[in-house]
Length: 124
Image (cartoon, rainbow, N blue to C red):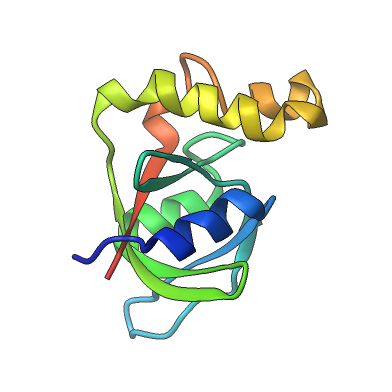
């Protein structure tokens, strides 16, 4: 596993959305999905706004790895389950970045129900 560079993290911060894809069992990349992302420290996270049944989330968990495109950064990632301790800080990061979109959209990716649908994106 490698780490996000400072430049990559700045691009994640600047971008409203990233494009995320998972790998199929045959090694080909699925079509990308546009999603919000936030960072805490040097880590980048995504959450499924429609819960654990959302197709992209189920496929990401099953595959364990994928690809991310954000602000000109293209990188393969591992999808990891984050430590429980990060969720309060991650909620705050989502609020800071996305509250301008209103409580409905931000509420879908913050609060007590989303830790189970949170993935940390670890560059490969």
